[in-house]
Amino acid sequence: MILSMEQVSIRSGEKKIIDNVPFSIDKGEWFALVGQSGSGKSILSRAIGQLLPKNFQVEGKILLNEEDLCSLSPKQMRTIRGQTLSYIFQDYQGTFTPFRTIGQHLEEYQKVHGNLDTRQRKIKSIEALHSVGLDEAFYSSYPFQLSGGQLQRASIAIALLLSPDLLIADEITTALDSVSGHRILELLAKKQKEIGCTILFITHDWRHVRRYADRIAIMKDGVIVESGGKHRILDHPKHAYTKQLIHATPILGKGLLSGLQEVGKE
Amino acid sequence: MSGLSLHLQKLKKFSWSGIAALICLIFILFVVLYTFFHLQHDPNLTNLDERLQGMSLQHPLGTDQLGRDVLTRLLLGAQQTIGYSLLALLAALIIGVPFGLISGYKRGLVDRVFMRIADGFLAFPDTIIAIVLSGLLGPGIGNLVLAIIMVKWVSYARLVRSTVLAESQKEYVLVARTNGLSPIKIIRKHLFPHIIGHVLVLASLDFGKIILLISAFSYIGLGVQPPTPEWGAMLNESRPYFQTRPELMIYSGLAIVVVVLLTNMLGDYLRDHFDVKKEVEQ
Image 1 (cartoon, rainbow over the protein chains, first blue to last red):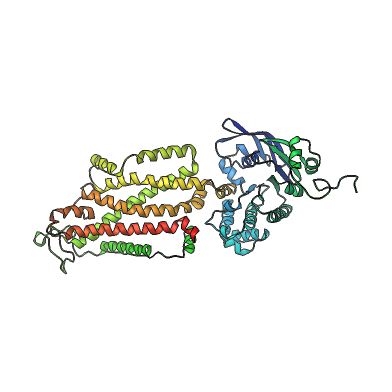
Image 2: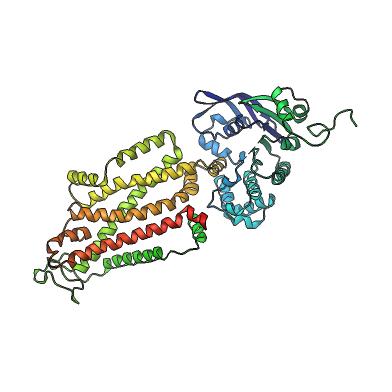
């Protein structure tokens, strides 16, 4: 088990945003967290990296590799961020500091995590760009010179640069068109197979969930209403809200919603 | 400074007034520095036999009421006026910019405390602080510079804070945090280059104001004390001879006007240069 949450509640002042969420993610799986906007998915994901502003209070235990993240000092937390735990966000335009090149970003994050050899850093940065299908020219490009898909590829390169154990992908395809979105996810799936990292995939798009997820959790108003394997959730939903969500998405094609063949049917 | 080079690449239209102002300012600075090493006359040597003389080879701009060489005093006065203005400006920047950076990045209690302190300083007009300080500590250029710093740092702190407040909400700061960067690194590498342009514009516009302030206070006797040459003080000293020798006032008056005008031109140029709207138009 790589990540487990025990009775995690998050409150902002009097208001409870996340209520008593328990869930755990196994090593190497693609775990999808689904829910409509405002259900608290992003807040929960940011709580894992201790990235919430101070006015949010997190209660409970968040265990990453059996280590309680809430009890770590800011300095210990910084060594975990980027190295063991990394993020990709929705807004690809804002992911990069506008006046720094992609290469500068890649190098800086390596330097922070202890790689002090300049030449080695550069080689590794270019390798990382190659591995996401960007050529060497992008190393010295500024963020505004790249397209949306290219930027999102570059942010995947950054997120996977130090082979993290857990990657949190927060609605990474929402701002992209559907073709680029699928390409990005395919790339992510390929990289996951290579590195063996675990992915916490936050989305509200059932198409992506159907295609890539191993396990699914449905979140509504700060509570996880249902969680389980893909086949269980998609084909045999129990909770009314899950059913409602699934029915709200028109899906073309035959067979079960999970894409599996129905038993006993030709 | 990669941010600056980026702006330069984008800027296609050339502003001659800005370049001219810059060249003139550099020339003035060069002349001022040159006087450090080479002086023909002692600026404080009085010679009443040669008082109030007109232009001559010996004294290119004549002599003043005590027979001192006006050109020498004008050049040394530039050292005083420009030098102390730069000192006050730099000190205000050194205090104001970090204050604003920390306040804007940390937010919350730190921000509130810092900004209330700034508001407290802002409550006093600069003239009042300068007069009170020279009343308490005695007139002198040191106290005047102190008064200017006390008033000016606040505007930098506020400017930097408001920029950082907006920028630190953006995703790239969050991404930098998720990749394990410490707050100091984020401020230095990802936020500081953003504010440099704004600060430079305000500083160059402020520079002229500070020169005027120092000259004005020296004129009324609260700044540089005689016999040290300073433009404002020189204006005051030659005031009784305005009817007979008006050029004595005109020289130092013109010097102030020209330098302030040049710094304002430079400020305008920098403002256009860093203006976001203009970038969009291009």
